[in-house]
Length: 75
Image (tube, rainbow, N blue to C red; front, side, top):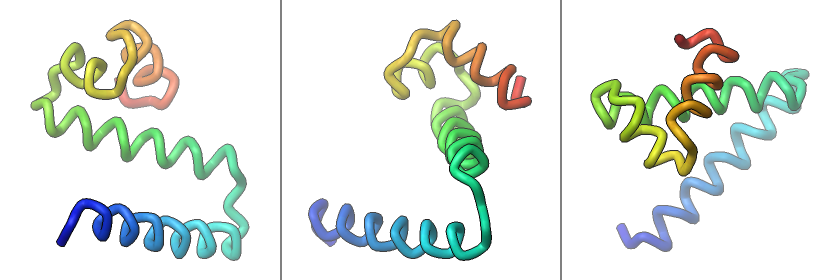
C-alpha cells in the first residue's frame, strides 16, 4: 500500500470514528482528551517509555510532555 493510500485510508477511518462519536454524544473535550491519551501512550510505547525521545517525536519540550502526562492522569 502506498503512503498516499495509507493516509487516505486513515482519514476515512477517522471520519467513520468521528461520526460514531458524534452520534454517541461524545463531547469535543472528551474526544480530544481520549485522542491525546492514546496518541501519547503510543508514542511513549514506541520509544520504550523514554519521555525525552517521545517529546521530540511529538514536537514538544520534555517538560511540556510531563505536564500533559500529569494533566491526563498518565504520570
